[in-house]
Length: 602
Image 1: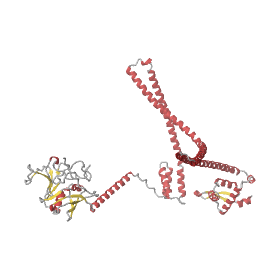
Image 2: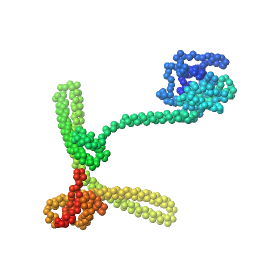
Image 3: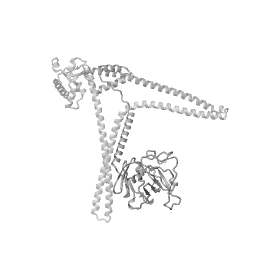
Image 4: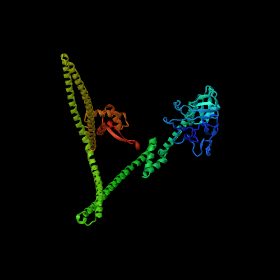
């Protein structure tokens, strides 16, 4: 049998595997020592002799001074000592105290049952105490497990003991199952069987929760410090707007080196809402200064692109020159390998020449592949520009072809569906005839027909689903086609409006008699528009912008185009006239009704 020393208890100053002497607790302040029987073990009335205590034994620690004490925070141990493996037998010894003796339980019995350990448990329940047991005896037995904070003893032979640390509870659980005897008495009141178990105390739970809160606070603080360390530095604060700061920023905007900083300040001021009637002109001048840098940036980009193209061309030329030199070197090796010169070289020289030739050919091939790759990239760039022009026409043609193909598939699926319906009707008719006839194989035929019907129905459902899916795809393609046609119509309308504007600008150069001879109103719709616009502008004597007029007309008809309205009004010069109103940033074009004045002129 092996003796397992429990990790939670103090280490013994001897090797229990080689010592068969029983254990004994000394006084409350004394060390843990061993006592051995005299050679004649059968005589119990003989005196016991104390073993020699080693010279380096420290009575305050209960272990050798050269060995560091086991603490619950040592690596590998944790707060709770590691459990004893269940397959390893544990042999407990007799423990002799000053006022009592503890006898170990039967090793063949199962270990005593314990409840689930409460969090932060430092209190144990001790039951099975002798009736004559006092608090002093309890302290004498359990103070070897650790510092005792409090003892609460009951009159019913049990008590609660609170220790200073959690790991001391595991040492106290080691004594569970021991039989205690006070002195040498055999009276029932002086004996008992100890049962040590975890106890749930509010003080332990409160201390454990406080410790957990402290750990959580430390973790939050650590995370906050880590986030602050990883957070990028905040940008410098932007000054508030003032006339002085505005002049400084305007000067910086003109400087290329300080442009980015000044633009950031300008952007912040605009987003803050610093623009008002008083500062609008200053902001407009700053925006104008920022716009002046566009040409500079475009020129810089073009210069960089030019440098890149020159560098590419230079690299290509140098690479081609290197390839020519490699070709010459390889030609030298090949000419040296011919029989006329090869026979005059030694064996080692021939070997070196062949190795050098292989290396030069490999390097030449690598450089050649690189040069060919550069040329392929240039060809692909040239072809991409040509492909982009033809993509739009190809997309329209593909959409039309897909629509036609889907139509054909839809028709074929519809025909298949009709054929399956006819087959189902025929099967139903045959099934009705079979019901009327009294054949001996009637049941078999019915089963076969039912199976066939089920298969047909499943196939029909699949065909219907596919038909629905194809119809949805066809509708989608039709919608895409309608959108493309609408886009084409819009483009045509824009082109016609542009041509009308050009024509109207050319007609304005002609003399007044020609304009009067040609009728400016071409349809009844335009006449209605002229009447509505005249009424609207007559109500607004100070004029209105073209956007305001079109917003009013859109309430009547959404299809009215702004360019058509402007073209119509520009044709009727004696009815409507355009004037520039406002000052500075508020400058805008407004149309006014001048029909009464034009009537007098005509």
